[in-house]
Image (cartoon, rainbow, N blue to C red; front, side, top):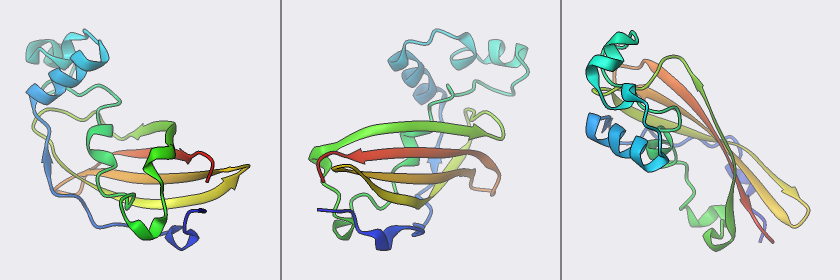
Length: 145
């Protein structure tokens, strides 16, 4: 079944605040196999010009899709047929330990490509004070829709 085009342009309320911790940053860096000390060692991060350890560039995936409306049954998304198409981030500054962030997502595109449905979601990752850290762009493909 085709995805519901009424969702194009729909924005979703901000997520609950998420506190970025040194532990979560280290666990994420371990999971992706990145040994960079600025993800683990506060002094190494400070020597690199950061106030605390920073998160790897792909860390916002942890929080960025939580409120994108993908679970809304009216979207008609079949999770069993979903593959990840693309992911990119545009940064204003690195995400760092101690940041408390929320994410606000908007579905910006839905279109058919052959027998597949393409869904694009843009998410602003901001501090609770309103500072934009990055924009996340996610492309999801539903195969054989």
